Image (cartoon, rainbow, N blue to C red; front, top):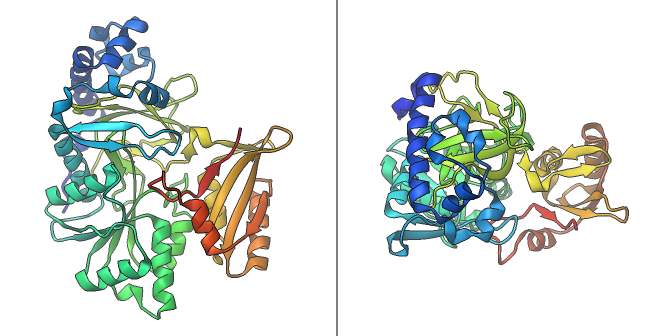
Length: 430
């Protein structure tokens, strides 16, 4: 299926005009219905009627995660009896935030994932095995399920679970695709190899990868995705989304970044001064939701750092594309003058084939500076240690403390009753 919304093939100027019409409607809606933005406009003396172009957005101070934490229910624009579903953020950077959706928002969410799956070459004949939780107020679970329904495809709601359970379901129900965290795919591959199963004879042909990057900043497959591709000949598609923006950026088959859907969100990449960065520069992903009824957001800074790609894509879409998330702003680490984000550290560790799992911990040392400790599981500790030290020295010019431990201890470090996601990075800095 090659379903592409018409607006996503228009010229840059046509897309801009289209978004400006929706922006005016959105600001009018916020002015009339949002207690938070009514106060925000008054505090900063914003004449909302004058915000009619994308260039004018810069006059409005951004909304932050702290605003959502501190004034969560002031963002609600509808009576509580219009809420159809309560979702929440994962709480990775603090206390979870509730995002309430109306029936209209649920339809918008399904549309978002329908066009995202279509972007990843899904079609009504596909069957996708969902290897992620659909409970615990996780928006992504319901989004993928409803998006597949709207596309006309089928879903298998397996959820997270043991590789044996995942493989048994693949054998029994013959899915053509997966929605999965890439590192969980490695565990599935390991299980099949240990049990002398040829995973390349399975029905699975494509995987929508969530939660972890599959590309580096130059859009080349990173170490994690290379590990997968070397052993399992499936097509990998990266995707990025957040609960707050209720929108996804998903790769097409060209693998040139996640496509922007201008009918759903206005996208900005901002520097530390809250101004748009120049093309090719890294900045903070900042979004304005379009068409959201329950909890719309205006210039919301996600905390995720990335860059835009503006050159044309051969898939036919003319929209900009969002590069891989290089890290979260709050997770930036300074090691002896070198600035690094956790995904870059993950990529180094994933180059050691004998390392099957790890946890990276950041802490404040006795000098008050950032430092790292890395705990790993490896089948060849001596060679893995040498390789990883060499890689850190050559790429970051810094060698952190590296320890080896057991799979059980790593699993305990990664898991938390309060978290929906596996934690590969733990920030213990003061």
